[in-house]
Amino acid sequence: MTRKFEGDRLLVATHNQGKLEEIADLLKPFGVTVVGAKEMHLPEPVEDGTTFVQNARIKAHAAAKATGLPALSDDSGIEIDALDKAPGVYTADWAETETGRDFGVAMEKSYRRIQESGTPAPWTARFCCTLVLAWPDGHDEVFPGVMEGQVVWPMRGDQGHGYDPIFQPVGYEITFGEMDRWEKNKISHRADAFRKFVAGCFGD
Image: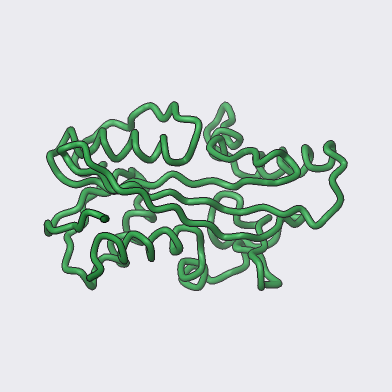
């Protein structure tokens, strides 16, 4: 039985303003006040897990413990089948450069490695998102979400972020990078995880 969320304040364990706004918008119907890790002056914990679940748990539990509030976190990334599901949890790491994160570099690296693997197109892939809601008493609930699709090349579109310009979701002729942000938010891996989270923690 999933534990219900019964408070009126939820801490979102992210320093990403866009993600915070997206989550606040989704929770508006439930009368929940959303507060971000940044305004609570929380440090970013070391994410040394090897799965999306482990990393999301690290962030959620650290935030819940530090503030005494229930905390929601997510960990997400792209799995490319031609690369044995890499980069996966290391999705953001592939974008690291000496001058900060550059996802253009990460996408080029992914494409180069696909070419080196000799795998013929279509290059199936999926975006994964795992949401974890943790309570200060140590309990948590886990909600995984997935969006299937394929990697395309060259990059297309300047909407979205991360690997969106090379990811074409199933059933669409355009990439996430060419899709309206709010349209993408309805069908994305995060939307899938959120539906499960809302049904589990706020449903009847």
